[in-house]
Image 1 (tube, rainbow, N blue to C red):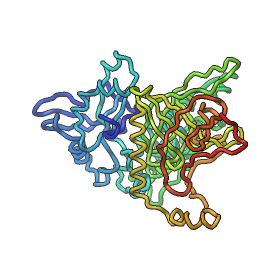
Image 2: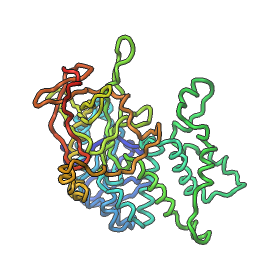
Image 3: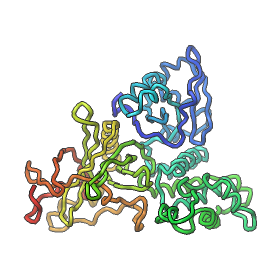
Image 4: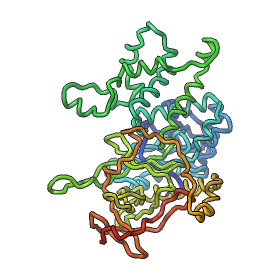
Length: 464
């Protein structure tokens, strides 16, 4: 399987590899498909080896009695602690499961012993290619619940890094779903304290004392924990209607949770594991590497620090150029190129992401761009870009809804990246500090106004 046949990435919070999805094989087999809430859909199927993902998908929808929108909103995934793959409708899950060790050897650095013991499970999860705008049109309660459960799992596992305020707001909606409407005077604080990790990510639930704990909690507001969550719980708005109607329908709260997650630029992404170089530090200029998650969605690419739980780099597809090298060439690397500056000088920046999944990431980026070009025709502003430029002025840039709070975990931290900086003049590469060999590639997206452009040198630039 190559990168165009499915999306492989970094496993999510609901890894169940110790549970086999297939209990018997033959003319008739029992198949377990796992949902985001950790429940199972048992299926008794005929001729499993030749059954396609589309046919299994249809069987799950029939059991759950889901509407037609579920066909686009969800996909079948093969998931283990080492690898996850979104299946295309034509894929045959059983045959891919038989090839699982080959996929692990190709797309992971897992030790041989782990590869030999690993086994994937079938999961019914959100489709990476399902646009957020279509989520807003969904009214079916069960579809909303499944999307909510998956988003909640990603938030609690810190796969979706969130600011403290957002964690509290999202946790409050989970409280409303699980505990009912807030009632003054009830021992709600005790219930929150006992199940705090059901409402907030684990790194916000840890309690510590002394200077070390204070340093580890830098940037964390004093209201974090039970009190901050309780305050947010009080503010959850109830829908109009009788008390029984409010209790019967949780759809508004599922929708509110998803809408809040839509503010996160990496919502709905496929996740991949990689490493990047650390900036050189200290007298000996020691660097090393740090683990990262690479989130790729229909909206762009985000590089997330796996330990610190914040974004290091976020780019829309209009803002980047990319390529990948394979182990056969040199080493498996995804290259991201974007505009930046070096001590006030405009430069092109190259970020090197080491990952055996570079090929998959590159293919997914390309496919997401193709989808966006096919479904989003040029806006009037983009169509008028030519005449406006000829007149010596350019249209205002398109506004994109993004979180821009100071210090937000979803803001890029370019200063924490070790990049190769350069400018281009014709076919010559002019390097900028630090002077290192560079690898330039020409694969570039052009989507009109605001698109990435190679920086040209000026007399003030340092010559390489």
